[in-house]
Image (spheres, rainbow, N blue to C red):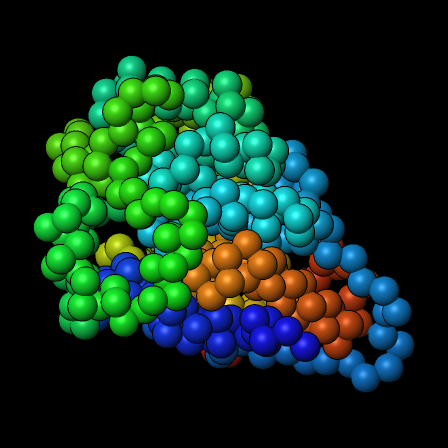
Length: 391
Ligand SMILES: Cc1cc2nc3c(=O)[nH]c(=O)nc-3n(C[C@H](O)[C@H](O)[C@H](O)COP(=O)(O)O)c2cc1C
C-alpha cells in the first residue's frame, strides 16, 4: 500500500501538523475562545450509537443522492473554506478531487484561486458569499461566479468577528514580502517539504482574495478584505431575501442553529440551509450542529433541503447526520488536512474514507441506500438534542 495513503482523517491531521509550518497549521485548526464548540462538534457524533443487524444485510449499497439539483455520488460536499497557503494548487486541487469523486465543491469568497479556474476543475461548484461591501459589489461578485458557471450560491452570515483563542492565534502576514519571509523563516525552514512544494510550483503563497473583485482587477489582501467586511453594515432578513432573489438558481443559507431562523430561511426563499456553527470557529459554546439538527429537520425538513456541517470526520458521522434529517453533509477540516497531507490525492483519500465508512455503516444497519436511513438507525442518548429558537 502506498505510503502516502492514510487510513483515517485523524492520520491526515497528524500528517498536516507535521508538514505545515506552525502558523499555517494553526490557521487551519482555527476554533475560537475555549474551543467548546470545536470539541463538541466531534464529541457529539461519538455520543451517538448504532444498533446493527448481523444477517439479511444488503449485498449492495447506494450512496448516490441529489443536493440543490445536483446529482452527487455520496452525500458529502466540500464546504467553502477561506484558507490559503496550504498547498500551491489550493482550491483547484480540492475542486478536482471533489469532481473525481463525483461531488460538489464550495468555493469561499476568501479563496486564493479565481472562480473561473475552480469551475473549470469542477463544474459542480457552489460559490460562497459573505455580506461584504456594497450591494453593487456583492452583485458584481455573484455575477462573476454565475458567468464562470457556478451552479449554486452559499450565503454565509454566521460570523460575529469573535477574537481570541486560549491556545493562541497564528500571526499571519499581510503580505509575503521579504520582511515577512525573514520573520517566518525559522518555522518555515523546519518544514522544507511544504516549502519545496511551492518552490516546484514556482511561487510563494498569495494572501489575496481574487474573487472579491472583477477579473483582472487588483485583488485585495486577505486583511484588507476582512477589514472592509467588519465595516459593512450587518445584513437584515430583507437583505438576505434580496440577495437570494439575485441568484437565478439554488441558494443555501449556511450557519443556521435555530428553528426560528430556519423558518425565516424558508420565508426568504432559500433552497437549502446548512445547520452549522462554522466549525466551532465563531461564537464559542454554540452547541454542535448534530444536536440541533433533529428539531430543525422536524420544523422545516419538508420545505427546504437540510445540510449539516461541523465535526464530520468519518463515514459513520455522515450516516448519523443523514439518519437524523440531513440530506448531505459538508466537510471542512477533514479535506483541508487531506490537502495538506497529500494535495488532490489527499482530498480524494478523505472522500474515499468517508465513502467506505458510510458503506460499512449502511451494511451493518441493513440499509441498501442512504434514502432508507431513519432515526431508528441511531441510538440517541437522553438529553442529547438541543432545541434552539422554539417558543
Ligand atoms: C480554516 C477554515 C476556514 C473557513 N473559511 C470559511 C469561509 O471562508 N466561508 C465559510 O462559509 N465557511 C468557512 N469555514 C467553515 C467551513 O465551511 C465549515 O462550516 C466548517 O469547517 C465545518 O466544520 P469541520 O471543519 O469540523 O468540518 C472555514 C472553516 C475553517 C476550518
